[in-house]
Length: 313
Image (cartoon, rainbow, N blue to C red; front, side, top):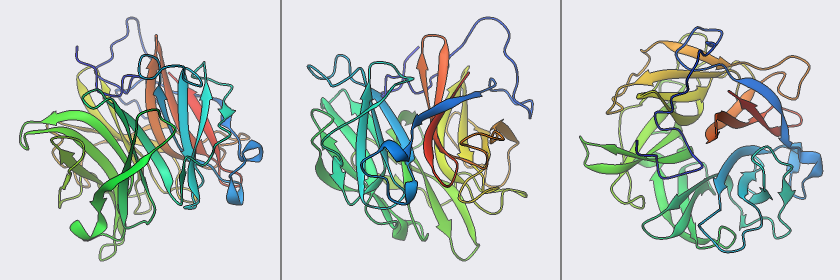
């Protein structure tokens, strides 16, 4: 089995023995249970409007000498004030704020990956909602601006943000990497999941057709897409708009070539907000990692304040 290139690891055909409990919607993925808050804005140096968004975690062992911790967690406020870092020796924390934050100023919504070929970390985010950009680093702390990866003008949308990249070869394009991101179509009034692909992870081609569109009951918006592979199947995970800029975590299955499903495809509920908790009204921007037999889902949750939270399966 060939694991994807973020070897924390983002999913690739993970199979567990024994029985698994289905989600409330009786979908094919295992059940996730909310565990708690990983980062709270009240304890952060940079957290305007008491909001934190978009956790992106990477394992540092074997990649740099003398890391601050076994794991680096990148995050930002929703505002474009800067992307920051926390570190820990345990994926469940506690997380220590890096004293040099922000590591990248005037940008938001980080997505970190390691490129074995170049020995560099690649981090995506955006300084403006109309595009997503890439920075690179040798140590995970000092990043240099590289280029714009995707732009809204290329697909006729208002924005092109909340990007996550994966190693996922697509035969029809001769590509090695994919990127999932969000873009709002003003003429139709819907926010969709979009696909871009790349041979080298640096130059990207954006597909002109939405990959996944909202269906009835999702209030015309899909947020924060991620890829989750399970037992040889591919799922795009996203948040609907049943709450303020977020809501339930849902997913839809795609084929091995990630052909668009549009507003088709059966939607399943992965996890919904938990009453009387920091995520009582919404989830947003989740990503998945495996440690041993445990699958971790990191996301932001709640509205005021917005915290970084996690669930497990």
